Image (cartoon, rainbow over all chains, first blue to last red; front, side, top):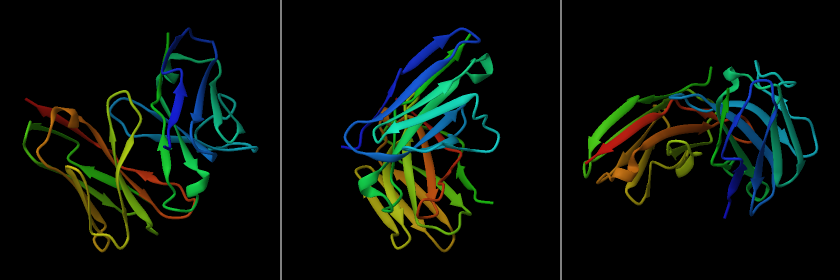
Length: 119
Length: 112
């Protein structure tokens, strides 16, 4: 149980295009999903917290118009990198908090990640 | 400022040997601490969770310890295998729905 999937697993795009990454909780409901980015040899950096049915909360320094987050259902959140540039190339990871385990250990389950390369 | 520091930054060991990874934190309040294993190009996978009252917890060849007084945790890997090669991340949760703090990670390489 507690499986989180991401799609695509990797994507290569041209500079200036937009890329959408999906994060799904497959066997549980998640009111909250988190989006992280990870640069080589660095730890995960929280970009935003996505709550179902409401606007995402972005961390300081993360442009909300650049990284559009939509959490339309309890099992799906999407991150759209708009007008991507080479500096946006990174590993993007989502995690989901199990509604059933809410408040218990603040459990998060991570997706497998999406490797974005912007040419 | 909440911080989680891990050491060593990287480690190379021979297959079959044991190793211990360290995690020091300044996060307060404290609810629990998790160790994750992250394979290259993959998302983190939880290995153990330690709450305030727990000192030791094992998961197969992984044994985590916690000293809440000194705010230190360790992850001991016994009889290492090539598949243990990965980054190990210590994550501290202050409790409730507050943000967790990620450690800097230790990159472990097990060589034959």
